[in-house]
Length: 299
Image (cartoon, rainbow, N blue to C red; front, side):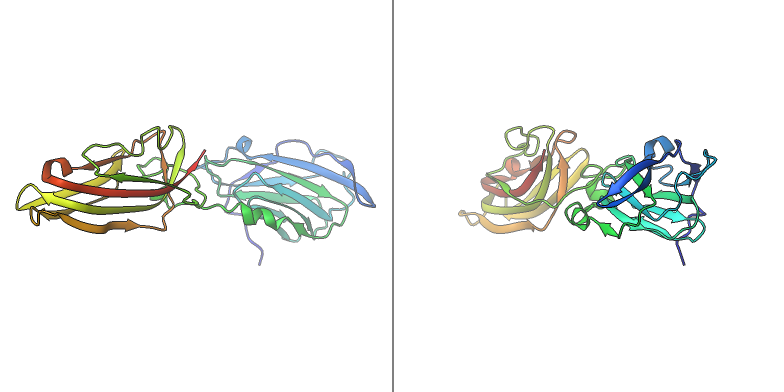
């Protein structure tokens, strides 16, 4: 059974279809170019799904094509799938996000719908479709979908519209983790992610690992409660606490108090200043932290 779009809002095609001569190798015929500027149809978070009715002969006394045999769909700039469904046969062509290709079709008239599902404010693209009377065998550029996956982050980690989040709204490619920073003897209030020398303002940072170790820590009292955190914009990236004794005098060494790896956490330095905070200056008489960050930048 073919997919049904009856539950979605419908609008007529914006524009007047017309035909042009075309040729592919030794085949000559005609095509009808159609452009779908989805923003003009009012799609977005409040209207994420839309069906457009197309009638190639609505404004012509004679058919502008003798038959429809194939269609070409250019959906390269779109992160949403596009469906073309012919009303007499329910034959449906599905164009994947970020794809382009030829599709032979099965229909006997000139009425069809073009549907887009899942539009957001982050991605309101346009789609081009060429309807032809030439039979072209199916071909889709699959390499594009291999190198342009969506990589949608979770709403909290990558950001959510209208709500507080650690990162920013949108998509995030896998970080290479090709850069690192090491900090020793961290003191209270030392800035990390907002330092232009580390992450210039306006760049996005993809954090892949955090390693925190304690070395030579000696408490100021019999048991001192040591705390630490990385936070910004009212959100805490990570935090912890532990009791530090004032003996032995050589101090406490704990490698990898926190060892977070395999992350792809997107932080945006242009909107949130991420800072290190600890009460180490108040509760430690010696020693401190080793903090290592591995990340990539997107610019």
